[in-house]
Amino acid sequence: MRALGDSLTVGYRVRRGYLDFLGDMLQGRLPGCGVSLENHGVCGDTVFDGIDRSRSVLRSPPADAQILQFGTNDCFCGVSAARYQGGLLELAARYRECGGAGDLLLLPPPRVRMADFDGALDAFRDAVDQIASRTGAVVVPVLDVWDAFNGPEPLWLEDGVHPTEAGYRLMARAVMSALERAACPVRDPG
Image (cartoon, rainbow, N blue to C red; front, side, top):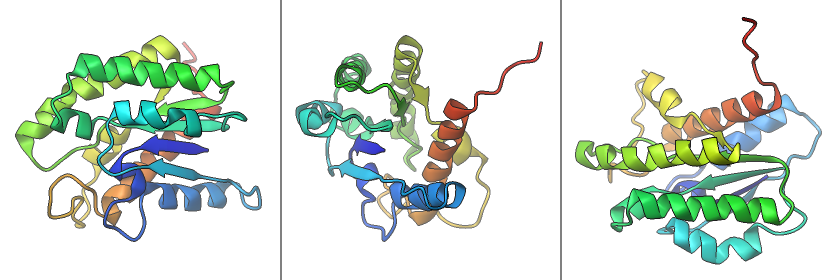
């Protein structure tokens, strides 16, 4: 599995980021299978930086699953949600062009502690949903998991943008939930 993203993929300023927690969860579910997680996160990246790096990340042989995680820096930098959506669509297409037939997981921007900025991210979260409906990608339910959290641990570092380890653990749970849904879809009996 490969992850292409920004500082949230890196695991900025924490000992363990969401990919570390996800690796533990996968090993727990699939002991002895040697699950490999490649972290291709770069602090400060926008979706367009991801496109620039995609030739080296979205390569053959393709990963069994690919995570794309951008949006927060795009919003901070004034990129419109429409341009962001176009960039994310291009990354999804590049994954498929390199032979990627596995799950494509889109991780929308998680919550941030600044209400106005969090509201501005909603358009980017909606763009992720639209790309998923056009491409068949799986949206990681990061907001559902984040909003359901009622533990005592703080979820953000002092900057209000980057998660603490508790926040990254929630992101990993959301990715694991998406992987389980993709592999074993629940069918409506009606």
